[in-house]
Length: 186
Length: 195
Ligand code: SF4
Image (spheres, rainbow over the protein chains, first blue to last red):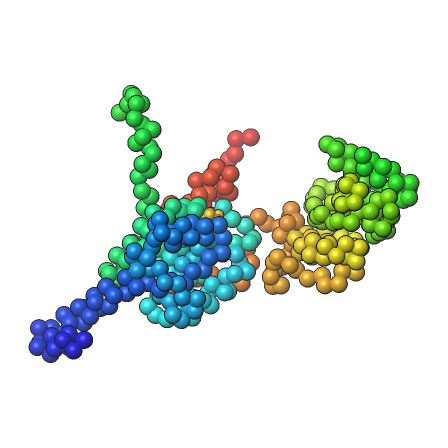
């Protein structure tokens, strides 16, 4: 840090050194996202797949769970949030230290999914700010990894607007189309 | 086989057994609420009946009928290996006066089932040791499985964020449309319907 201050004092613009510092911090933060897993429903199965060696999100520095919200940066909301759980989720979010991010894992956490009735909060963004939405019921682990990388990009750029993971090309579609004649209009 | 159970109920309770049937092999007796508890005690304690297991207890709302609710009890006898379904009908067309005797001290397992039926439909079990809501929170008003509870009515415990405060639209974002691409989803009405 001393060197960075030195750059500031040499007078090439105070803004310059500060930006570097925030970039350095962002770089450090994006590879050490301590997660708080708030796992409530079937999406948890996919979350386990994501954490296990095959997909292995520890490659991205996001594996260490902290079961105290005060020690975590990234709140994974995995599964359906019922109206009854909403105060708990809200409180966990409030107890987290800044800077903090929220990832909505699956359709239920993103918008309530097909639970469109008296039981369910129609998306966690109704109660807490959300950074990344991963659609899918449940999402494939690849989609969640895309979401994690999207979040890392957002941390680098300092962009706090919510973002949604784009669907990937379905590889099976190309296989199916092999041997099919192109249709008349193409 | 357990038609003998239905016959025994008819012999014992006479015209208080409102109806019986054995459709699809499920022997069913509908009894008057005044003998609900007596019928349960009889089925549990009589040596020939010996219904020692309460498989399920639930309620059904038929908004066009009076009495409006049906309380449905499924019983199984582990020693005699026979089953019976016992029903009773309570409640006026507004859903009031839906009161039936509790059977918790006949089968202990009916405790939470009666609480659930109370929570979801508002049927009161007289004599239940602890008749509180079990699934919904205490602040919840009304009974969500009644057919006149609005399908899209929620009662949030935490106030929802306002769009002004959040700075982003809080309606369902693309691709999370109102029906999630599922044809059976509830869509906003679009123009006049065909039929
Ligand atoms: S999105 Fe689908 S898999 Fe995930 S919690 Fe909801 S219903 Fe379960």
